[in-house]
Length: 220
Image (cartoon, rainbow, N blue to C red; front, side):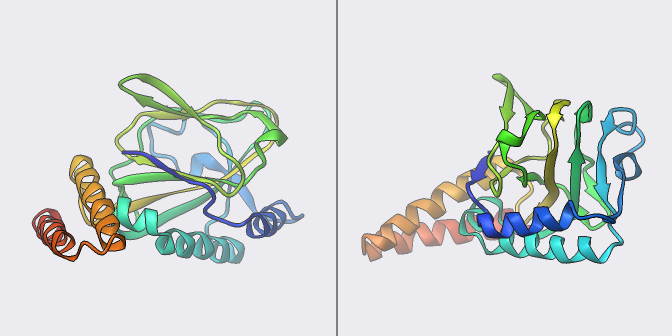
């Protein structure tokens, strides 16, 4: 299951983040430094140095916003948000077809996410292309919006034709490894919240029991 959060960050927060990232003297490095051996040949971007104070500050802001969002909590069931990278692509830069590593330095990658930080009108090209059974699905969201998708999907970033694409990417380790189980739990959680709002206490209790016991069975 993939889902969008529109927006995750306010326009004011995005503007401040973008200004900080594009300020003079910010340490940008080749994206190939963080790519696996098989992805280095297709990864053509720049990334904010992970050991910089700015990276630590902005990554914490994104992590807190993700963990505080109710849709992310219900649909992703996050144990941790990890591996955050801030990526910059100018004309001719992009990221070829690849799948994310199963394990990153700080956790398992069950779900991947891209947080768009550039106004889509400020650049051309640069769509995130997700490979699905129905074919490639282009994703190009507004500044501050987030797409979350299974890390099992092949995907790529189209080369930017003009302007500059700025995003934050990272991974979520979920309490539940299997995507179909997470989707079923999300549907049950959505149903029980609707029942709670409708004050149907008896059915709410039954659905909550099923939800909780399935989470107990399927959770790591």
